[in-house]
Length: 269
Image 1: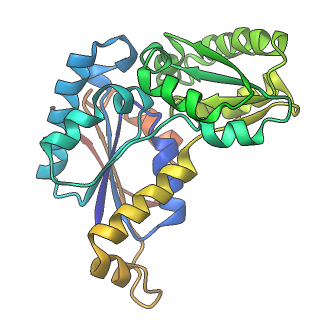
Image 2: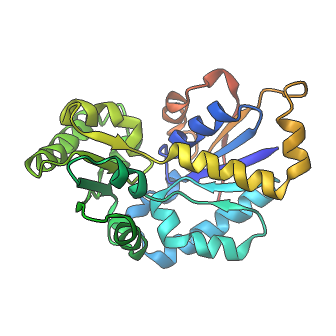
Image 3: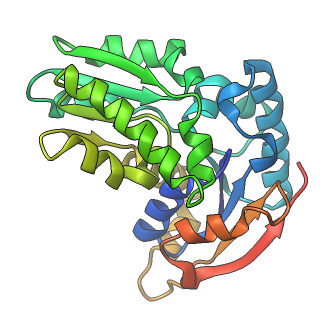
């Protein structure tokens, strides 16, 4: 069984790594839409049109489900994708619920791209779960894009994280929500800048669990067979980029199970 996972760049590989670790029998087809990046600078209409086209690409690849491993694409365009396909579509939302439950001092920061930071969906989630917590919504217009240029951009990424962390320390933030799938790729830099007194929350485990629930509900017999220890076969990983092979080595570098990479491809969307 094949699952399509997409993002504007390398960020969704945090989700892919979590899926592969939890359910290694699934074949994973990853699309880094580098040619259309950064998503954070695009309009909602542009993102909706793009996601529908990506959905058609995944349909031609005969995937059984699509994971939109991008906060910006989820809040701006996942409804358009769901309306255009019969496949199960799983999105990623800021992990504010567990963050509010975890926070001891009731001071939570949500770090996102500008599109996600300004989205009605994020505001709805915060209003639903914040209770008596103080919430600071922070955004960066460049951090996700700069992470895609890693390691050449390491100094710039580090500087941005230091500046953001300084503002969080001034507000005595004790729990940080990484509301862009790119950001967990450099979680260690946030940990270094914020120290052990600040907990950091990201959504990969929750997205993986939701994907498995949807697959089991939609394909019960196939999933039962795949999950049988006697019949399990190691799944493969295929990496695709819409920007030729320019960024392929960077994508490979973020994959934890590199030995399971079957193919590297350029695709036109």
